[in-house]
Length: 158
Image (cartoon, rainbow, N blue to C red):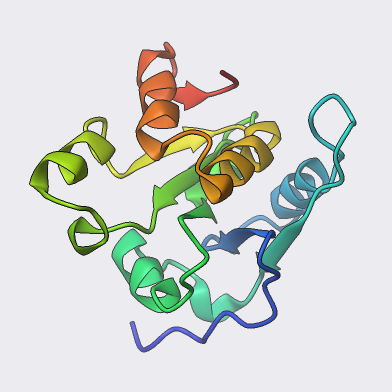
């Protein structure tokens, strides 16, 4: 795959959702609708930056991470991949953008990635994950652990 286009126009507090599967427009519209619903019991407005560009079709996690690496305010990116589009719950793939270089030492990085550098979350969980990671209230590893403990491997809520 060639170089992916730059992500432009994302607000500092917007969750970044990138569509990497372009086989089912109806499923994508369902994902977008779910992600634009108010969250936190209807208490908070959804702030999402969507990337819906066929240039991102079939992009791998590593390709996406390389493309978004320059966004210093981004600690997690959400992918609407083939699994997202095919699953009834449309669970997105949440991927930490943090690398070993972003951590103090190997121990910190090991803790961050204890359950991997990615997990699935239902659309209603995207905002909670993004908001808490953005303000440092919770760590990626806490959400990954919750997904790890779920029978289907999906973060639903803490």
